[in-house]
Length: 222
Image (cartoon, rainbow, N blue to C red; front, side, top):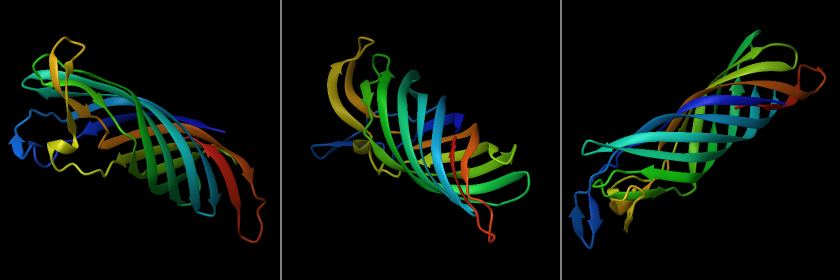
């Protein structure tokens, strides 16, 4: 059995074109990129054969980021839920085993909140579920025949189109929590997340060695 904790950065980049199109008219709407650091906890189940492992897991992260419009700071916070399915290739060295991994990450978001000062033009934020790519580099320190200390350097990329402001904001006329009048709502799906995790894993089952082949199943941290 196992678990891991992580420190990760979360980022929203600006779209290619910073214009919002409405009724055929291009509007120059102020928009900010966002970036910040949060924490996460993760667990996964991996089935391994020789140097290859296939894992499915769950990561719960509490994320925060800040942006700036006209010199005024905006604060974005949300909880992100990841279900990654990854394939990992490991180099079977003696004490520390390096590996490469990659796969698909299904992401959903809850508890989204945007604090925007009056005059920025934004009222709140929301995020839809999305599918991302996850990839990274790992190192497993062998602490015993069944016990490991896995370290993962990972990135998560959301490939959703971000061509214009129409892809990243939506019109909404409402009063924000700070009392200002907000005309737009931010679409707050993360574009990039990257971090480092450290955990402990335990091999629940190892097939007896024989004929030069071995397989095992493990429940481990990301």
